[in-house]
Image (cartoon, rainbow, N blue to C red):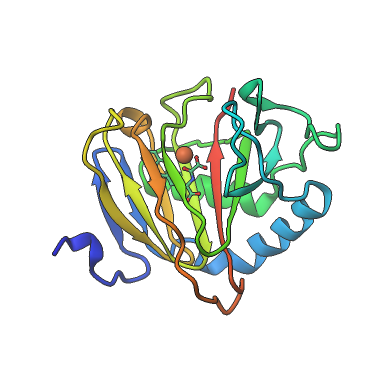
Length: 214
Ligand code: MD3
Ligand code: FE
């Protein structure tokens, strides 16, 4: 059985590739601050199910914070300064968000990380995210920092072609994944979230992904 399936201790690190790693439990000390910030963000920019260019409604519910927010509709995928639902700017990245993103990036070897966008994903049990690349950002070398909260999930970490074999990576509450440089364009996805309930979040998984969009 792969080492990736072993129980992981908080404060340890699992390398997935040369420039991609999991920092186990790295966000645990700031979860309360993150959850308070997410509640404020969703009060002004509610979670919504975006439509793909192909006309499918996404299973994952999404909102954004930052100068830019990731959007999808029949016209395509893009980053926008304004929430198309309200016409207002997205809520700002909070001090707790920015500090965690920079601290995790530094821990993974990327100093001076200042993201300008945070996509917030919400998964109900049964929700999956199919295999994809994140290719709407101008900077394809800067790291992406991902924070998992609530229900556990199995992350699929692939190669540079959709058909490459994938490795399954269990992610639990408080885990942070950082990837950049040569591993930035790998295919990845999330298997359907199993039913369950988490003490802090209930029947939900949340994922924050910090990006440099521009
Ligand atoms: C490793 N979100 O929003 S983040 C996304 O859990 C997205 O919601 C997932 O993919 C989520 O675009 C996964 C972790 C992640 C994302 C992209 C990667 C890890 C990665 C790209 C390359 C390598
Ligand atoms: Fe992604």
